[in-house]
Length: 452
Image (cartoon, rainbow, N blue to C red; front, side, top):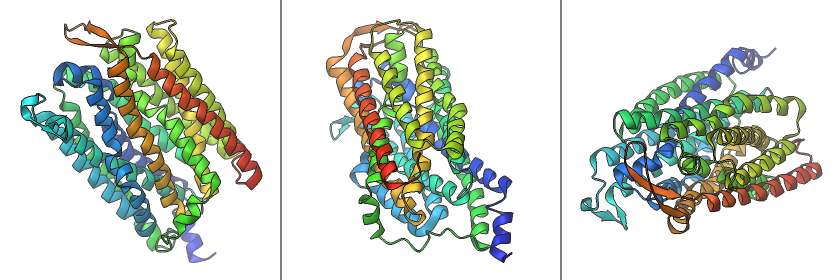
């Protein structure tokens, strides 16, 4: 047995070591997702306390793609990841998240929400500065996402990769669940900026946790199990990625599927309040069923993929279920809270099926040394939907779906919206995802990627 083999047995082949790594990087991304969705259940409160309109809320979520999409920072982040590795890139991503969170908190806490504070590029100053902070944070969390994904691929290569990625997604989604559940409660008991300050502290803790991972990863490299991609990636490798049909099917599926999930979650609490007439705190609790379902089901489906395959089939089933869910939300039937709970649980299943198969499929299609850039391009495509779809939905709500106003339990007035059109739009994304999943299954049969 060679020295390298002994080291691999001690570290990357050590179950306790690689699962410790998985827990650490998942912990970091969990708090990133917390801040990412900290404002999602607060749309009505933002309208009541900060005078934000639905288009302001949509513009704020559109800012998620200002740097990632328009300036291609996410793609550059992938190139940096392939060139300098998971430690350097991950630390930089964490710093960006903390800076963005700080700016976002400053905007909400210290800048007046009224027009007397002035405007920047047609937006009230508070909204614009909050958007800038969110854009910087978004660059950090997305680069962190591709970095963590590649780190897991490095540590779990040839082992339970799909299960590990499923667990990482599940733990990260806990951050979303926490945000949906506790942020409305925090605002009601403190102030609108308090969840953002809380998020900032959590991000710093997540950064410290990532530094622990860096120590472990450096030890792994120093003892002979070096990341194969580091210092081998060439910019010309991007051509090999973008000329791969299977890769583009994965990227487009990611775009359509996540466009029907994450933007929906930005407005889901408002949907619960407007269609099912529940209180804001209960609305957040119902929406949290989606990521909480992920916690249980994504690792299960990931384990099935590891043992049985059928990755493309899992994606087809998940896309079908996603479409059904949004059509049920669009229909004027059973506008009661318990029916909304059932639909949310179904959406949680769909949201577990597709990611559990999608992300572990990328290493089957793309060589390891190009994985960082491949994930970066996929995340870049995904960010087009994550930024533009919320903006589009916010404008649609304001222009076509306003139905007057309603008075909440606390006596504050907010706008009443009809969510039929937005739900139909999300269902269309689901239908397209079904078609792409079917094409991916055919491509896998032709090229033998091993997805099935």
